[in-house]
Image 1: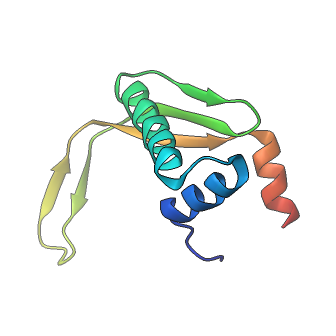
Image 2: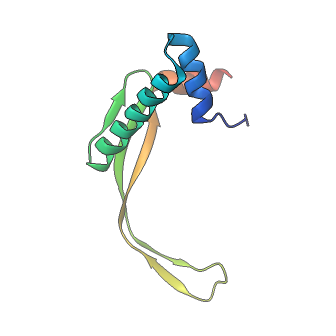
Length: 96
């Protein structure tokens, strides 16, 4: 398992690569993430070819036991966001 790469590290590398300031790059990254979150929370699917898809999925409610095993709790139906990597992404992961 690799290390955790933070958003700030991504911003720094991206800024170095495209020639924008870190503040400008931070605004671009934040804007992109906000748009993805807004679209998925509105029920839309966001697709980046050769990278992957973010989409909302419906999770059924279920009954679970508390950690002490004494009580049963009902978890209601909910919408969750999932990321499905594209084939190229998946293949690259297998190579490493």
